[in-house]
Image (cartoon, rainbow, N blue to C red; front, side):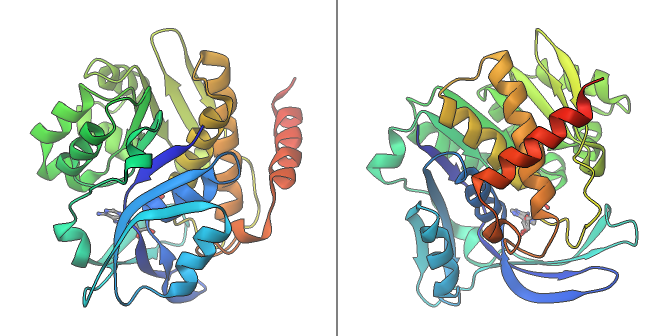
Length: 300
Ligand code: AMP
């Protein structure tokens, strides 16, 4: 089943304690679509400026990612994010954020996108996420991501969105901010009470928690020794998860758990290099092999 994603496509400058990269390919939708492309065909909706290097579009297309919904604004500048990681490589600071063409983005999905059954609303304004959802009325699974910026600045719009989506994926700190509850188990269930049928709380190097009416569980992160740049781990996690659900055309509890595990594993590869560089080196077989190791690790 094809999968639609709408979100940011960015040029990122990233500083880690030991290395620095300037204006590399990033953005929630870029990470998400590449990660999902290991499992299914992806249709990407977003916006970039004239400064967006054509080789980045070529890279996405090389993965069979449909970019018909990626608008290019003439004379415009691409969304830019600059971040710096603290020595623990988990916490980061945003040093600069220029919305540029993303500020006026009006999604108008191509017809083929509108018929999709699987939809992911990556980080973005809840108003815009809602607009996209209204263009894909036939979707059977709609999952959204959100972040502190929108929790603080557009709380009413976010709550309206939560009433309509099937699933929500967010970070631990964002779950606490959204609910005002420090205990993540309570926070997960409190978010479910706001609307989504399931909630996934990402805890960075500590894995992910899942909440639904039927079950609550935690999956650990894959213990990779090599963490070069954690940027995009969350979006790759969501891409792996949604890609797998779309591939199986199912979101029953068993498939959801497998999907969370695949999301975990794609993210574990993403952090091994900057941008999409590590994902560009691997195949589905590498993911499946890591899945075997992950299963062995979890069985006792
Ligand atoms: P992650 O590390 O998975 O949380 O995602 C990092 C990506 O999110 C980077 O590539 C950024 O370009 C992108 N990003 C940062 N801030 C925003 C924002 N306000 N809206 C959309 N995307 C963002």
